[in-house]
Amino acid sequence: MSNRYWKTVRSSLRAYVPIFSLFFLLTSAIPFNHFIPSSADGAGTEATGWQRVPEILKRIVPPDFARKNFPITDFGAVEGGKVLCTEAIRKAIDACAQAGGGHVVVPKGIFLTGAVHLKSNVDLHLSEGAVLRFSTDPKDYLPVVHVRWEGSDAMNYSPLIYAYGEENVALTGKGVLDGQADARHWWPWKKLSNDPNSRPLLMKMNDEKTPLGKRVFGEGHYLRPTFVEFYECKNVLIKDVKLERAPFWFLHPVLCSNVTVDRVETDSNGPNTDGCDPESCDDVLIQNCVFNNGDDCIAIKSGRNNDGRIPNIPAKNIIVRDCTMKDGHGGVSIGSEISGGCSDVFIENCRLSSPNLDQAIRIKSNAKRGGVVSDIYARDLKIGEVKVAILRVDLKYDPPEAKGYSFYPVVKDVFVQNVNTSRSEYGLYLTGLPESKISDVVVKDCRFDGVREGNSIEDAVGVKLENVYMNGKKIEE
Image 1 (cartoon, rainbow, N blue to C red):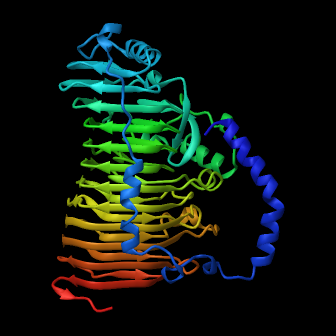
Image 2: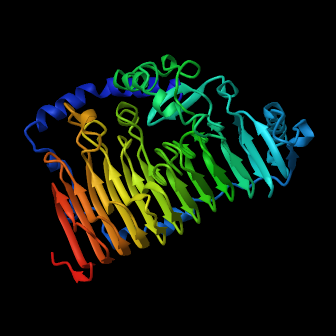
Image 3: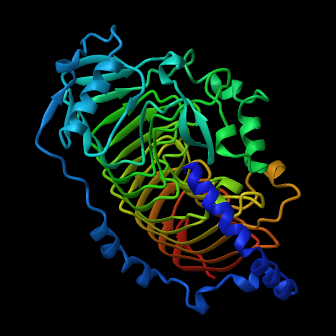
């Protein structure tokens, strides 16, 4: 978000302070849960929820590009993976944008580059057999740019591929994007980020509402760059490419609308290498993808703490279908940076199985992060083996962080249907809070086999099991 955006938010908040004060005076005696509508009060139902999908899909239209090609070799790029081609790629992107748009083409071969910044109406297209290999020198990702880092806004190293405030941007083709991260490059920063001058400092700035202009990281700090980050962009397409060896999160659209991720493969077992993390995005389609990751395969987010609550921009209208999830912490996760809320997520026809996949569907938050998560729908999932649970909702995530805070998260209206599994520790693992119970979880027409510990349900109300079999035996409500 721009500095002008932050100023607007602050001015708006000041204007409404008297109204907020009166509201809290009048409602201070009313219990917290009074403000949380239940299904009986008119919240979503499974049938009406899925009926919204066709309308969402009508709005998700991939951008179209002029039939003009700009091969990076025409601008000085040298094949072989030894010569840095950053400047040549920049010139090709500039020429493409100035000509009204088209395709910046990476031809067959290996090309080495630093940060790539896309512009409106530009598709970065990797030909079959092309490998765009990214430098492991942090200096090749300077100067710093505006990013969202683990849900907090910062000026940090540029993502490997980046766009800010652009329209009609794409990353396509059957080539490979290689981040070159490994045990010697980037991944050791996971531990180094705990230096007081790195991640703890950014978290402190979030808590203190430090202006963006003072949140300058980059050189001398250890915040790893994301692989692909499109920030405040409209009409985004990522299709067919394979991404491997990410320094940090793979695909990270932030505050974007009309996003399509199609036939993409992510492969990396490094720390925090999430597959696709749409954050505070609206109208997102993720389909036909294969995720094999060192963290969540898909993690839907909406900002962390103040950086999510103040702008209050939820993630919503997100469709995940026909995907394969292998290794990862969660197949489809919501959170934990979910302070801006999330609603209307639809997951269907996915295959999830690995001894290294912890949960199939996971929702996570705590009393510091808060957020309202509602209207989550999953159906027709084939789940082989997961470590922990089929559905896990955890509102006590990272307990030390939440101590002393009362931004109680809300999770309600979660629907799971026609899910078959072969092995897990738990079926459902629901952990709410006494102050804010998980509500209205409906599971129907499911078969959970190979479950070792049954269900674990704590501080949850309105949990309904309809035609659910566990280890061959029907579960009675």
